[in-house]
Image (cartoon, rainbow, N blue to C red; front, side, top):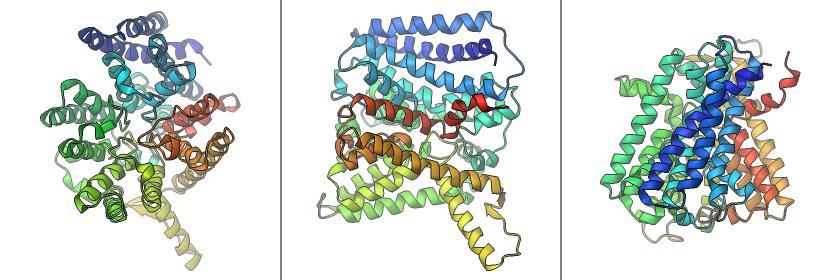
Length: 479
């Protein structure tokens, strides 16, 4: 393996982080806050270590599978390492493990936090915190397609660490076109939400940071009470709309915007996604009415926001869901596992795999009825290969096993069952808030340091679709 090539492309990731660090320093300078020098120092370190390998190590047209996976995973780890430095240098609540946890949570768009008083952070650090979401939300896809365009099948392997095979085959763009599509949608949604939130009364800083967190389906808010801080139905509605859009395949959003509306209407995955959000909202509202909320309007308002927030792996909150009835919490746990669509910035198992599981089940039943028949699973007229179905089932099994094992690990540290289970599921699914001590109105500061390391690993596993990180650790066995 050529480590020089890995250093070169890892340096590009540091330069991208450096650009946002200097932007955060500008925010800090304008506000005259205490985050300026920690952010500036980190920015100089990022640029220094990023620019030298980029200048002195020549680019390579041929990159092996091993090198490709190492570049991507190393870029994530370098980003998380550089991202924790401003927190550590600033101090406050941040210890080494807590700064690492907050950084990993940001870049993986999980949104879990160890902060008990978010507003205590200076504006510059809050902007950097939101920026880690925005960088991480689309980072790997853009990185692979922009700096590794000549990798051929390796590029496709890396692309699938972010997008399921089903989503990738739906929209077969060339690498350059795919990058343009993703950036057009990602930037467009960010700008539109920023403008909409400002119309609703938020200042520019709050609007931008919330837009960063929404479109990346991250969930970091500059307010301790999250979206509930504003007590505004219009703000909640705007955020819900953009959370829902951010959970849909970016390629599908693009073809819809360019005139092919029927592609959106015909998509089975999108129909299932929207139906489940609507059904979950209705069921949760019925459960909450008369117990937690006296009026139907309040019940539907809070049910809709929490279902959409968890169902897109964003993690914003307007209510303390830990206090909700058991059935409502079980609904949210269901959405915590599934989340939204592949090809978006969401985490979890994803609706695509749920649809694939249903078609695999139908295929198996038909094979039992007609043992000699040639049965193919199809979605929207597209035949799904058996390899894709097998990978889907394997992913879901691994997902459940990892949640179980990490629940055991967190429980062994003295946490109660609900806290241990929901913290494990929420971090692996990159959702953020769970239940118990890590509920939507609380944080992860109660988790012991060992538990924070375990949950940080969960977040990286979930963001790299499990296989991406596992394959990295098995590189030595590759032929």
